[in-house]
Image (cartoon, rainbow, N blue to C red; front, top):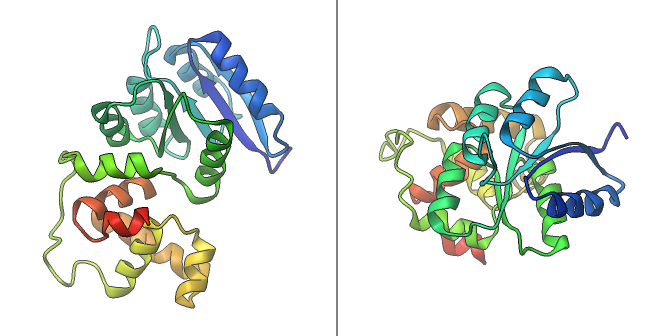
Length: 224
C-alpha cells in the first residue's frame, strides 16, 4: 500500500476510535497505522518510529495530553504531518483555536462517513480542507495573533500571486491552478512558496486564513 494515505487516530473514546478505524480500513487508499488514546501515546509513537503518517485525526479532549497541546508539539516537531481535528466541540472558539495552532481541517463527530472520507482525501491531495462552517468561523473570528504584513502596499503581493492565492482559497489543487492560469505546476508551487514566505504563514491552511482576514478573497465567493 505504498500509495495509500497513512492515518493515525488519536481519541480516548475506544468505541468511537475503533468505529472510525473500521470505516477507514475498508477504503483501498487509506491505511490506519496506529491508534492512540491520548496525546502522550501519539507523540511517543512519532518520536520512536520512522513510519510517520500523512494525516493525524485528533480529538481535543484527551487525558494526559489533550489535542490542542499535542497539535502544537506535532506542528513544531513534525511539520510535514497534516492534522485534522475530529471532535464533538463545535463552538467557534474551539474551531478558531485549533486552526490557529495548526490543524488543516476541522470535523465534528456527527459528520457523515462520506464527509469524513471527503475531508481525508481533500487534505491528502490539497493540503487542507475547510467546510462552509469553518470558513464562516475563520471569517468571523478575530484570529489576530498572526502578524499582519503590509497588505496595503500594492506591491506586497504580485497580481499573479494574488490569482494563485484566490484559487488556493477556492480549494483548487496545484494541477488545477496551473491549468486555469496556463502555467506549469512547478510555477504554481513557486508562487505558493513565495506566498508562504511573504505572509509568514506556515502552511496552505494559514494562507486561507490570511486571505479571508485581509479581505483578499470574499467569503461569499468561497461559499458559492
